[in-house]
Length: 34
Image (tube, rainbow, N blue to C red):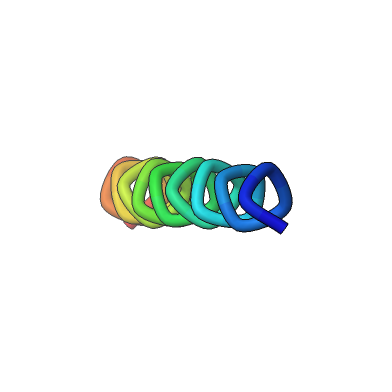
């Protein structure tokens, strides 16, 4: 159970990072296109 919780936290943290990164990328892309 402990390892599962640790993995879940790690995956969730990485997911949040990726989402913020993609938001930044899309924002820059839209800004450059507009």
